[in-house]
Image 1 (cartoon, rainbow, N blue to C red):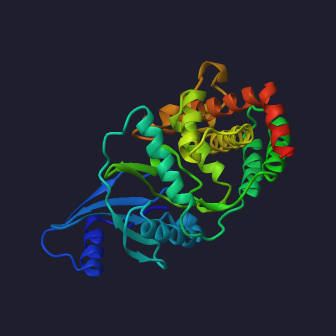
Image 2 (image 1 turned 180 degrees about the vertical axis):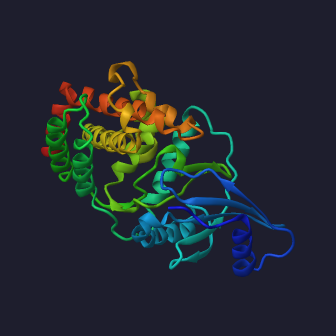
Amino acid sequence: MVYAYSERDVIDIIHKNLKAEGPITAELLSGGLSGSMLFKVKTLEQTYVVRFWNMQWAEYFPQDLACQIVASNSDYGPKLFFTDERSCISVMEYLKPEVLPENEKLFKALADLLKRIHTGPEIPKGFDRSFEFDESIKEVSALNLEYINLALISQVKKDIFDALQHDAHLAPCHGDLHPRNIIFSKGQFFAVDYTWGGMADPYWDLAAIAIFNCRTSKEEMLLLKFYLDHEPTSTERAHFSLAKTTTQIFYGFELLKLAPKHLLNTVTPRAIEKSYMEFANDSGLNPDNFPVYGFSLIEEAVSYICSQHYSQDLINLRSN
């Protein structure tokens, strides 16, 4: 959709609804994968982000807004100053990014964000991850990708979701904690963009954080330890590994669906190990890079699926 909003329109929204006085400036920000339009607005007293929702997905805005409000009130999202549900507009606090902490401090701060989300007030149920996964498989099937065994992935999805039911409980979840949806500011992480927010298995959020921030299994277990406040048990490790695998595949599919179709069968998966971690540094979000990111996610997931660890993790959860 082509937006008709200009800097002048954004300034008028701030002036009219927040009664801001004095000089007001606005600049367009680079958006994320949602297609929303973002402006950074400065007044004498406050800096805001004005977000115009991508109206192609307008039916998802009420869920996103409900989660935004909870996040604002619970201090794990930017403070909300104004919303217009009819026009799908929100005005929130601008969070100035700070240098990320290093080593253990990074994983402790990430675990703290997860705990603030998962122990916060309930939010609306949100989308059905199992259903959306099945729909994603159908969409990827239409792309005719020679490197992906969709029959295997369909069976794995069924087996993992069945196993996770034995150990799952529902908690408020963000549902999409990739690096562009978290901001380190004021000494802690905040989450933005709640399109996929809902009551869900908190290990989905844990998995997303681990995928894009942990380069080794040791770092994954450190994140898990900080989150759980104890050394993870074999059942907790199995739950994490299985949730991580389906999350990798889900993100991989999303990136492949957004990629230029003529590039999809030009990538050799085994030459791109962990390339998906460059997604955080892709400042322009160049879609030409998405096949590499997507295939590297799926290749790593399939490598685990073909290992003995996968079979043992399924057994651990099913017997729990």
